[in-house]
Amino acid sequence: MADRAVARETLRLLNYRSRNIVRTEISRAWNEGMAESIRAGLESGDIVGDLVVQRWWTATDERVCDVCGPLHGQTAALGEEFEGGIAAPPVHPSCRCVVSAVVLDADEARAYREGGVN
Ligand SMILES: [Zn+2]
Image (cartoon, rainbow, N blue to C red; front, side, top):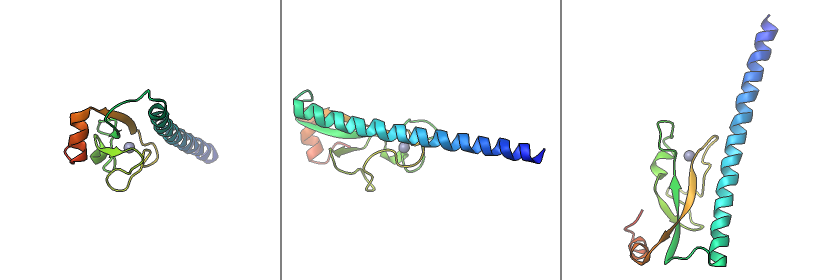
């Protein structure tokens, strides 16, 4: 009987760990793909603007952690790190954050360069 309980708990933990790894690696692949598509869009001219930056998005729910929460809405220059020296999601296992490109118009680009947009 005890063996069955141990086996059941082992299976539950393996399942949890597997899902955790899959979620984290999907997040990593998504964000690397996003960064690559931004680079390709700039190179091909499909993304045009006075300035293109990257913006951090959390899931904006009660499960967002203390590390990711303050990053929500922050912008950083392409290829640069966000506050705290964080380059890109995932920050931790099962991180649900994403980064997207934000194309700024001339006024927004000026404000960004002067430190007024974040
Ligand atoms: Zn996160």
